[in-house]
Image (cartoon, rainbow, N blue to C red; front, side, top):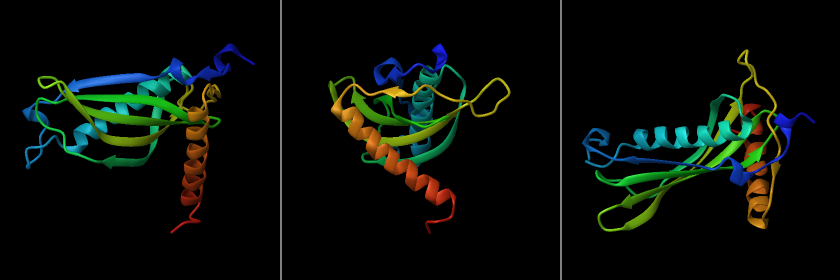
Amino acid sequence: MPESLRPKRIAESRSTLSALMGPQDTNSHGNVHGGVIMKLVDEAGAIAAMRHANRPVVTVAIDSMTFMEPVYVSNLVVCKAELTYVGRTSMEVRVEVVAEDPIRGTSRVVNNAYVVYVALDDSGKPTPVPPLDYETVEERQRAQQAQARQAYRKQHRAGELR
């Protein structure tokens, strides 16, 4: 097995991306626009996927993104990303979004997302990625749940689901 495809632990590719929200990030209701959060989620997830694959990646699916609470100006948005599952060339990344009030010292989970990336070779074609080396029961459970989501995505793409 080439060194580039040796199994990797989830901890090896975790990423955290933080951004302070300002007035330029708001929608017409005065909350941070969902698109701003989506961009940060995609960037945090892509960093984790690139760390795992050691290759450029492209986003191929946002499987789910759940907005649970609004984010406000002056909140520090922290996106925590980790791989949950890898296929041959694809990787599913779970991203948890926390809004922190740095003045009050409080934080709350405001969003969870599952994003799928594909690693690319030098010619821009999908390329194999290392397998995951699951270390905990929780990681194995998340992998099983991710496999179920992947099977659903494949059925959906094949037109088997309506």
